[in-house]
Image (cartoon, rainbow, N blue to C red; front, side, top):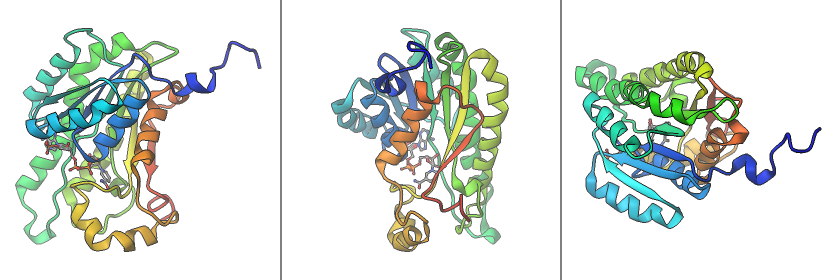
Length: 264
Ligand SMILES: NC(=O)c1ccc[n+]([C@@H]2O[C@H](COP(=O)([O-])OP(=O)(O)OC[C@H]3O[C@@H](n4cnc5c(N)ncnc54)[C@H](OP(=O)(O)O)[C@@H]3O)[C@@H](O)[C@H]2O)c1
């Protein structure tokens, strides 16, 4: 071991001076990630459709660091391009892209409608792709061989095991996002950009509220770790993947699920 060739503990996880975009950062998992990145020193832009929710989240998160909220409907291609332009207008550089905004649609097979495919695929699959495309120049500018830029896609364990709920387009969109993660990892690695996915298990959020109200205890009991996810579980994995500690991972799908799908 040669001194000077390895980082101190603080350097391994310090993200001071980095810039990140966290989509869907106004609540739930996106807000958990935004908070973790802010605490590690990142300047964070969050985004969601609702302007009032954006402003409130910005106020809440500003306790932890430098945060700016930009309303945008990311299910639309032109809105992804507009957001990408706004985020990079000042520096032309972006270190971390977290593609987190997502939607779910639960409905029995017999009545599952067309709109449930378009709505979910547009936001969960096409939007991360459009954002990567629009932000590539900025990610390339930020990344180096020693410290690559990072793309973190939020997938789901619904794409790893078979979900209990009839959410056909949702689990399919997440399986496709996991595959897109690996495809982009191979192409973008040589350009000094890592691409990984986090596959959350159950975390408290608006999306999961009804399920956790009804089945929360049962779901927690079914997990080998006997609980649902907490804010720090999500903040921690995002900081790890964005930091020097995570610089040599790419094309991975990291389940953060207390063992629910990993031991199924
Ligand atoms: N919670 C879980 O247990 C769980 C498990 C596995 C995976 N996930 C994944 O984690 C991600 C976050 O989910 P969550 O549970 O935190 O859900 P959530 O509480 O419903 O949050 C979703 C976020 O995305 C934003 N959003 C929704 N539609 C949007 C659109 N068209 N354009 C831009 N932003 C939009 C929402 O804000 P607006 O409504 O204001 O737009 C909100 O900020 C999703 O990709 C989800 O699939 C969650």
